[in-house]
Length: 276
Image (cartoon, rainbow, N blue to C red; front, side, top):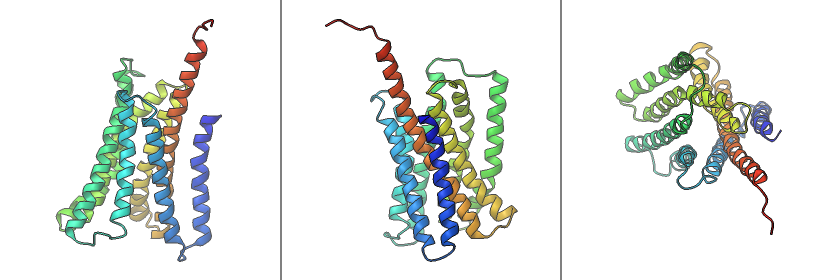
């Protein structure tokens, strides 16, 4: 039941966010509310990832996976705190710096996700499913990620080389998302292999976080270019998926700590007692 709460809470928070957005409409309170919500969920994702990271020993393999994913959110928060208020001013050089921070954040996320995706192999265990089945799942993930985020990468890169350095921010984010999305399949396969045990939950919830970022990018593409929805609706829906991505990262980190605590308790309970 404790693990199921980690699924329910992000969904409830997302529903509350939508309800508040509908209540305040497009009034003056909407912008500060949305900004506060964005920074809050990113901070919670950072807390969740690092809560899991520091539960491991210094030399444990998965410590770096959670640490790097937390660093992604750290750099995203740093970018929001420095560049959005305009403390450094504006200009081409500032745009390049902001894009560099976003690129660094996405590199941290990609490397951290890759480490998690390889955990099954590093442990010396047989990957789940057949070789053909695994290849098919990975190929489908790659096709979906390119279909959703690929056009955005093209547009941002075209704008960037056309003399709009601010597009480097979107290009770095979209490119990182594509690589991260391609790693969804190995992470999902790990979650399926662990089904029935407590360690299934961190991987499953982390997969949900990656999917949240996938739909975050996809909402902008579909809403603006296919459905031609109004900008406010697209922004609200995309923010919901961003919130889910961040909150499921928090849940995944907490699930990792809970699973490790359960494993330790079971090991202690099964150990032979010693008379004093």
